[in-house]
Length: 189
Image (cartoon, rainbow, N blue to C red; front, side):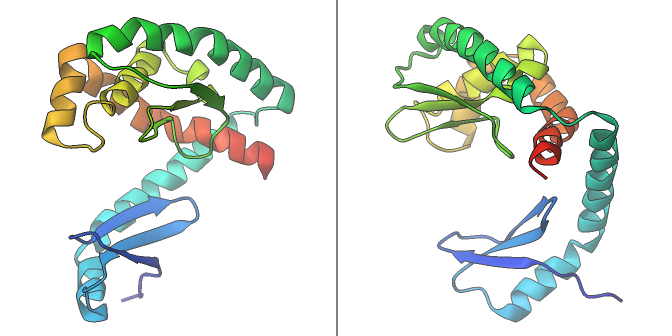
């Protein structure tokens, strides 16, 4: 059987984890994990890795059918996002019960949004290519990090209280988002 290649990243985490990116497989491991434990973990997830590689290939083919975004198109998306997304943040912040710092709009390769420990929010301009409900789901997600800086059950309870349809739109983004992100990679390629 063919050996699975991967990049290993050790940290103070408690569990082993896998992440499949277009660049390849990443294995995240606790500092104390032995090479044998890591190899066993990867081997136990061979089927998952194969299925997700196939899914990633489908997404790449789907993205190849979409034209790469031009610099002008990216600038237009960013400008639209600068107008629209802060309005949505202002709308949802009181519903979440959270304050926030600055709002930044970027063209990002892998993230839809982020929230810093200081409360600064960042959003991907490519969100403007998604349905409005997806944008709202990302805005609520990031605002809820002002309550919980993690992805615990408590965090998702805040998200679902404010945006009950969150899982539907999160699924839409998981299924369709990679092709949108690849349109920027294709442009930078």
